[in-house]
Length: 465
Image: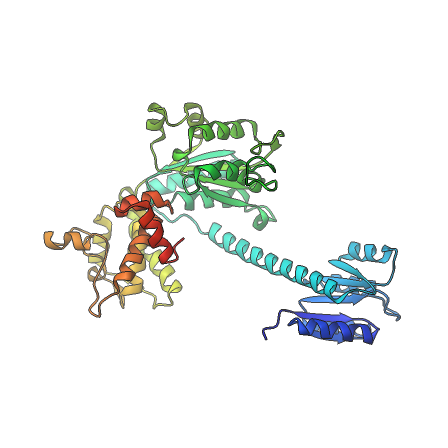
């Protein structure tokens, strides 16, 4: 049986903790018993429990509260549950003030102990997962936007000025695949990284086209219980969840007009009202809006609010397509070669042959940085190479394929000598389409020239949704 956790029990009543230990072991826990406070702290720390049950009245020079205080001084991370026979709860309340996670009254029910232990261990696991995700986010945030071309350096200087000034809303425009979300994460990093508790500051990204229309308003603004049929409880929206940090609204150009009005109100009043609610809740959020659409054209044709456009565009950053920053192509290629070699445990490719460099720099990259990333990822996975050479790259880069092979090669598919599974090709095309459209299944279906229902069926088949 897989052990569910390590529990240390300290109580001078050997009968009680022996009985409790047996019950916990039957549930799959590993237990360790101590009956005295003598050298208890050293023994506890040495055994490294996941949770501890500690009696308050040990009948010795040191009581349970003394042990708890000594453990706190050692900065232990595991939860401590105090066991008390005091009906008044006074000692238990003191224990909570000293840092205990919970307390149980004697005589206690073994089932009650199991419930408390399960709850605390689940909380610990959740906190560990959150801490891991926060560390991963911090590592991602600290990665600088890659580019040494003059146009990118000027843009990054402007972006850092906007971030450090604490501007409340920023608009990032640019073609699909140019790195708008990467720049948004960097703005969040520049804005908040000097804070001592940076890892606790929220960064939340939401795609305005990825959610069904009947759900997006509740996701953005939250809702109160009873606001609609399925609103069983109150729910915070992403504006509230991002309070004190950054909210990225991707594909803002596709937001419905009625939601645009509510967003404008949030930007101007810095308050949000949940769906069905009557109270305006104050928020302090840095809002970054991204789009690959021409918002000026959308304003002219009446599908995007003019007042919202001017509110967002006070501080705007336009990311150039990769073809306009050819000086960065080789730099990005080296970065992706290193990144994917680490990801797939492949040998590091240290050199790029001159002909390959020229080919990469001369190609127009219609899919921008995302396309370059996909090409290099495929090269790392599929090619056993000492250096990146021309023959490692897809044939359509640089227009090298003949008319008879153009249609076959335009998806960057290379047929290896040993053959390839047709299902693998199908799965990869689905992944590429979903990546290019930011997981927008309607747009992905259009790219692949299939119906939405067919795409959804195939995506489920390959566990892509």
